[in-house]
Length: 85
Image (cartoon, rainbow, N blue to C red; front, side):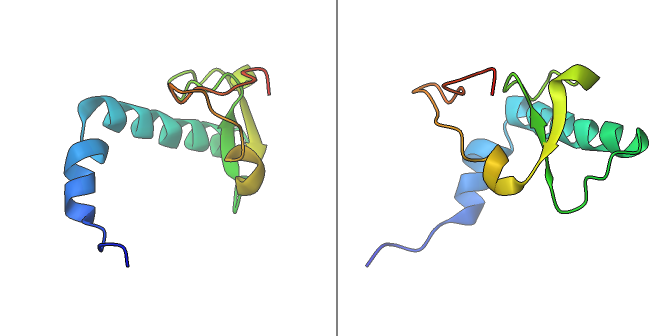
């Protein structure tokens, strides 16, 4: 049986890092940008075509289902295998 997850430790080690906070803030900004432009985003993910969450140009954003947006094969450094997808 696996040991229970320590969510407090996970947050302290990853989610509270300044770089990750900036990425999360930028993802939220991208979602709000599409909402303001009149794009229906309810129940769907906002996808960054080039995989960079800090790049919120309108041409780099699209709306996809969660399963499509989160299913890209990743490289060892967590980038998309096909960055054009």
